[in-house]
Image 1 (cartoon, one colour):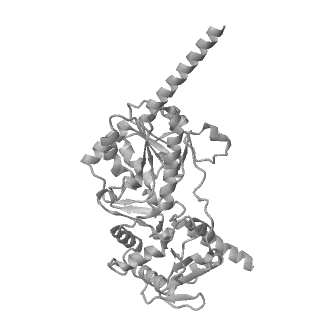
Image 2 (tube, rainbow, N blue to C red):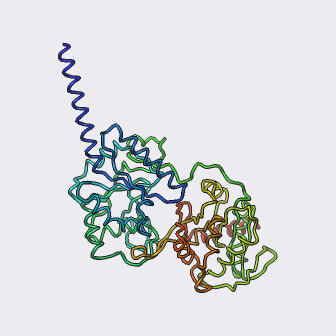
Image 3 (cartoon, helix red, strand yellow):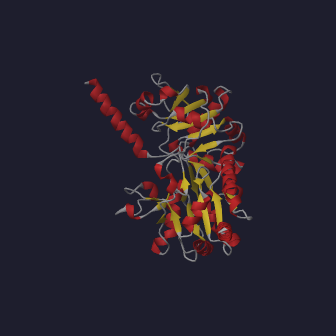
Length: 439
């Protein structure tokens, strides 16, 4: 009986070692890529995730996996757009690896479960895996793609993680050699990557993986998930109201309809706020910067605001926020977010877009979603010679060029978003309630 027991234990031990060895081999063939940023707050979170991945894998074998941080690979201005890196991935890992797995800094990964999921797919074939998203209706940011039925096209939720098989990576790298990326705008990266991979039907569609999750780690489904993602709100201490100076860009023709909405919604949360217009209206009040209104661009007005902030506002106010008169914002959440960042760093924060990144372009913060500057960033900008090439130049793109030239990276947050339809909806609701309440 004792011999049988010892034999059983020996077999179990061999089976365990075999499983560990198999997992170790599979792990070596997965390249983890964290979509990180160079700002100190974000880079620390990415490093924490890297340590967590390595800690989980320490018991699976002697060889630890390769974990890359996008911002440390940034030989390309557009590294964050992923596609320019395909040639690098192919050269470095195209022969000895099976998967490139991408995730965000706040994605949580259960490595063993991830390996079990990837094992289901034949690594000799082209695979594009992720949590599937789709448009309910066609939208301008996707250039009204698949307008007849937008639900047929799936694109990945980056927060849940997504994966490309090496054969697909090699194919994309080869295509990029012969057909360089167009000098165009990057607006919604996840959709644009899926569209590029699909190649008008010649490439693979996204294969949905239900175990790639974005639900809270405390949810009932979490045991089935290989990845989780709680939310985008960082757990930092809320900063003081006086730490944020809010500049609202407006013009005379919008004083009567847009400004009342701002005053009745989020203005009361702001301790320091000024309205900048082409006309001095004491009932608001507005500040006339002496810059004529332009139908588009507003570069002259924005740089005048930056000058005023630096020279006339309190030197103790570390943050400047520039918004349009149709931007909706939670000042409380903004203060909570900004408390995570070091204002002594040159920070330029918002929703990141790109222009011509496949051919040496630049990144920029889209103005409609609001732009946040640390005082240090404004000082560095205005100390340079970079200015508007015309008064009606697009201010957000000019700022992107300027900061790119200064070597100051754009810091992206998904908490900022540009949606024109949202303000119009709120505006309609506000005036309906105003009419009802006055009857």
